[in-house]
Length: 79
Ligand SMILES: [Zn+2]
Image (cartoon, rainbow, N blue to C red; front, side, top):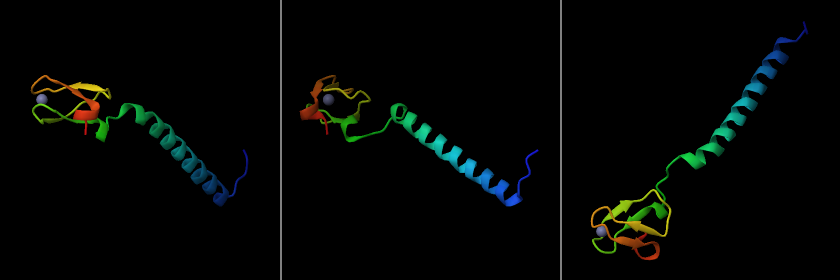
């Protein structure tokens, strides 16, 4: 058994807790960027025909309006 002072043991315990917490935080934050759905400006569309504002999860150049089924261009219809 390695003899440790109580303050050294407490310091090591807190030190490794902080290290593990930061490592888990960075690891989970890196993975969550690909999974979470964020409503950005590129996901909000306004239909050029009926001016219906809707969100589309697909980040594409063309989007179909759910109300009038017309196809909107990103430069014209996307906000
Ligand atoms: Zn429409």
